[in-house]
Length: 413
Ligand code: HAM
Image (cartoon, rainbow, N blue to C red; front, side, top):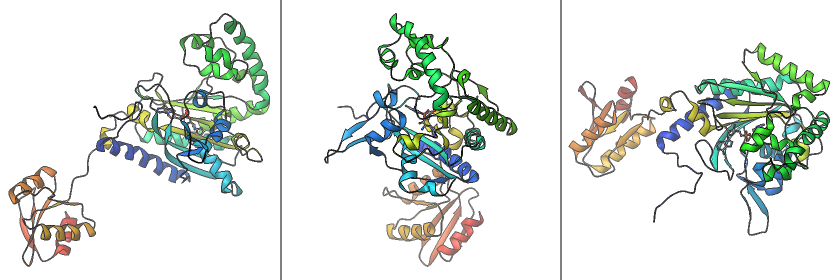
């Protein structure tokens, strides 16, 4: 029997974890600078939450949601994304009483997709959401946060695509026009069965279908941005003006819509690395109606984004190797007597020194060889009445009366 993990999941080995931690640390540091506080939400929620939030007629819900019934009969689902859960938590805990509420997160997400490079069934997102403002400045602020973070992660060939998908009012005329355009293709059997089925329910979804036939149809389709009402148009212009003022380069993509139904007005995606279908390293937009979609009393203006950690690592200029240097121990404790070694290690570690010692039953000579291989600067020998400490780079040795003195020598370098 081969021992393997399920398809679409990956084990992150220590080197990869170090890269992931680097990515997360860069992100959280940027979040701190922008005034966002971290929030944690559960890995699973009531299944209906995502249906209402993300939209019933989307790939994420129709094809990809991991849902199950627990022993109590409750229908639950693993989160496919963070925004719906964070919005649920904001409403549940009244975080919308003091606005803006600026929240960030690092989470695992689950989508039953066809696994390939950069497309997993369990993946990691880092993201941020700003609640409480309709002002284009908040759209520009979250885009700027994502941009600064991705740049600091040295994502190669970073580009930003933006669009506006309007508000429900201006969307009606667009959706009617789109359905009119798509109908002849459906009648001729040129749409995939899912899109043909979705035409009457949610025609916009045809525009992000990955099937070759539907992608060809998309090219001549009406563009949502051409149907914006004056307010949405003004909002879009002001977002672009803010981005220009911040020197954030962007491309307008009139065909950009996103795979989740909760967006209105601004939508955006960041591409990086070699491009391609899985070159989208992050995406987001405004989602003013999500609060009401999931049962809140009213809309709650909000805008945010999420970045795919695995995608970022693929797009980093050094593949993440720059971040992955393992930390070397400062000291290696070499001793024949296990008790003496343990006491010395404890004293060093308690004083904050990264110290290692033998756990394999090695001889003193073998321990010394390990100390040298580890790259430790110091070998520490517990001896009767004190310690001996050796600089492994120069070979120089000196006595230390106790662990505290050894720590002082080690910390001096
Ligand atoms: P999303 O575009 O579905 O948006 O996902 C955000 C990012 O997660 C993508 O750009 C991609 O980098 C990564 N990602 C998505 N699916 C996969 C996958 N199967 N494997 C690996 N990485 C993946 C959202 O999830 C929204 N909640 C973003 C948002 C936040 N909008 C507003 N606030």
